Length: 430
Image 1 (tube, rainbow, N blue to C red):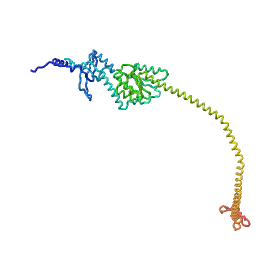
Image 2 (image 1 turned 90 degrees about the horizontal axis):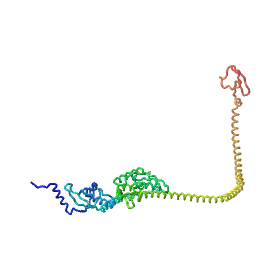
Image 3 (image 1 turned 60 degrees about the vertical axis):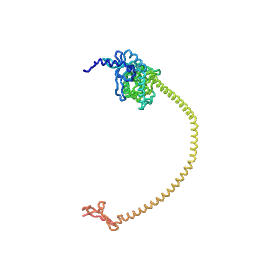
Image 4 (image 1 turned 135 degrees about the horizontal axis):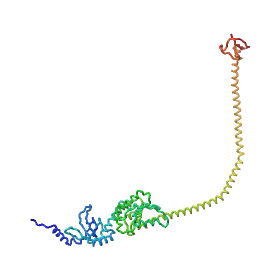
């Protein structure tokens, strides 16, 4: 029968192999996964991925509580972040095998500068991508409103920086009026990016109501700012249609939003002071314009009075000259009128005499023509007169003074008078 080992015996053999110096206190680069802290101990998995993102190696790891507090504090001081899932790390590990719990790596130390370099690499990759896509300076190129008074604010309602901003803005020493509207957002942690982007989208939906956007956060640890170094957030701010002011960190902290916004200031108070100074500059400009208008008006009035005075002294002389010239022209017209009138009268007299001669000739010709017509008519009248008719042997019969032209008009007993050339005959109709 073939000899065999128990599982415990086999695991003990593996455990004995862990004392090989080649697996003790080795520096290993990997990516953290499934990191959690329990009772002060930090448990995680260390992963290695290929270029396609597929996991090619995996190892469970632990940082015991006595070591974790020290390493995490140093890691936070260097990188600005707590040790978390998804980080590239360089860790000093010792292989440890337990018969019951299996193989795991015990982390003795962390090279925080390695992770910081990787974080900066990621940051530079975001900047390079925004630059390559041609959007990194889009918000910077937007024109700044002359007097930004309608302010959309992205912040946490209870943040001290938000309160400082409102106090500095609304209680300014110049009495300038500002209208603010808060769009609440989480300003640290994993919810920072989605809530800030959601706030930007709500503002964009009514962008005509605002002049600019202010993203403020105020104080806090440097590690709280790391969530702002995100491509999606940077791209949204860079392409936003309104100019954006960021005041989310300290003087030493510059995040991706700070690099792509229209203006980056140190603190929320500085953002408010900038807006106040912009308003004050426009107020001073209006005052200067008002002063210039008053000065110009006074100069124009003085010049007009001077002109009026000149015209006042000039008008009598001009009027006298006009009267004199008109008098000369009138006298000239008066002297020329008799000559002109006489010439016109003589001309009209000649025309009148010509018209009289023509009229006389016309009247004489007309009278002669009418005389000839009258003679012709007289001859016809004489020719057709009743007496000449009687002289030619005709007679004229009348009844009660009316000429009888038909026998039907005569009745028996009517008294008829017949006129002849040399007398009348009375007769009674039978």
